[in-house]
Length: 420
Image 1 (cartoon, rainbow, N blue to C red):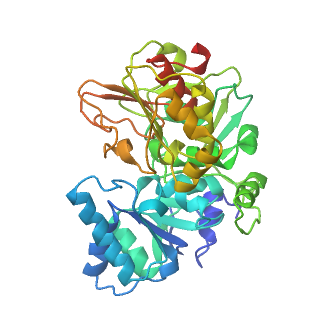
Image 2: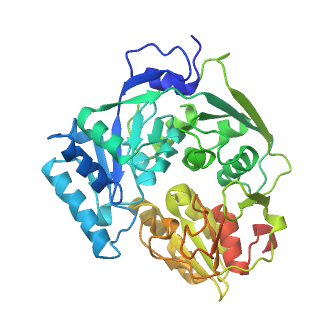
């Protein structure tokens, strides 16, 4: 049988022959992930099912990133529960404090996720790892508890939508724009429980950090996974980090069956923004210029990597953030912070009047370090803009790339870099 990338990746982890979409298969997992919000729930379920030991202490990752540094007593207690469990189970990959970072940036950076892996996480944006050719998906904490105990779980083989990006990317168009354009076209449920397989000449040239951004937001279209073939760019990513990896090419079979095919020509298109209160409410930046804002957030598991920091710094260098705007910069991991330091990007941010914070999810989920008040409006490089997502129910969040977010911070209103 000719297989899609999703089918091929699942096939690597099951003894059953995958014959069709919709088939239920039992698969071995490569890594099980949870964070400071979801891990305590999984730990409770783990104990409730009578489990005594995790299946492999080297294949569990617990990352304290959402409310850390702990913002209150409740969040501190959440971390304490997880820390105790990690110590009892001798979990190898427990991350807290100065060695922690935003989970979906931290794990690929450390080489804990590799092409061909099957990863499950108690976080919906676990699909990020499709950017390196892994089948990665979010699950509820009960399913994660089962995976921690058994090292396996069941999966329904998803049908695949093939998305082809062609043409020429504009100077200020980024991977974030590509995924927003797709979500704007197919909607937030356009890929419900399906795989998005990204292809085309643009994708072949897209660095892995951009691919991770796109895979991250596959869930915003309802997708189970967002997948990229393992290719020369993947190899380049791991080698640049000094990581070892099996670089066997992993891609869909030519002539395999796709449920749907979507083609997007980027020629002549500029940056876009996702407007409140759905990621699918996508408009060109030019249609929104002059809309005043009070906050900008540059970071998150979507756009907190070093390429995003460089993009933001290139816009902010020699400029000042508007006096009516709070511009919050949150590099995704300690390594990214170190790179920003070495490349003098922190100086650029501070000189521009930005607030530079720790490697945390922070304001993305309305956690801390940037909560919006009544009626406030923010441009963010995060992944969701539901009502009340970042604070007050009357606030508004506009999703954009780092270049648009940085330009907006300088202007004091939603703007593209061409406005500067």
